[in-house]
Length: 256
Image (tube, rainbow, N blue to C red; front, side, top):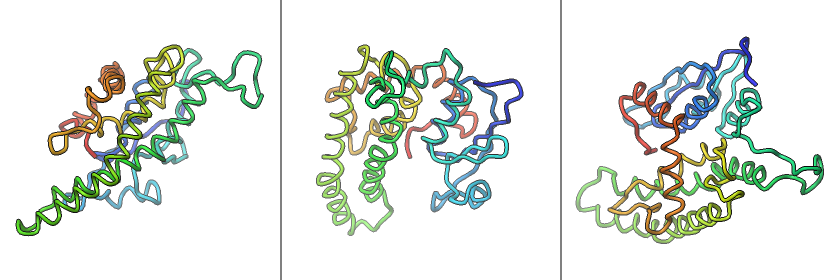
């Protein structure tokens, strides 16, 4: 739980990155923090070398708190919740069923889902998003017009053979997870917003972006998942985070 003498939190913000989820989490926690911004290389869109002075990998998100540097979204979220989520916070579900403390299989369904999605988000869902970015970027690449039919065919083949089936599997799975959420949802882990929902927002918002006139995550095919993402964007802490993103970058974009 946060205290008045808690060490300063600095979010090292790289434009158009996964940092926006950590900013949202900080707003939801209601703790003081500062933001240090970094600009991508305009040609290669890579992070600047200055970020490597913060963490050797030079990636974002990364936070510094006191004398400690923490990278990776899941670890950052877990660390912040452990130290700054108050006793009334629902960002981390209760771990144990009543009378089952410390027992194997004594964990609540909500807590098991929470831990699962903290890993699934980056391990499975963002892997799919990264794979999807390959054909998307091929189609947008500045190439001679006479080569475009070839590259478009390659991109379409990648999309139909690998990306589309992946989205069908994962989005269908998440739709079913919302239908079976503890206490009837409406969040993935139950009745309350958790840090896992905040982390899951980023790949799902990207899945809603229209490519070639179609978005993988659409209201017709995945009504519960669509409503879930709209609900996430409508939370007060998310709105505050978006306002800050606009202040930092001049606009808010859900694109990678």
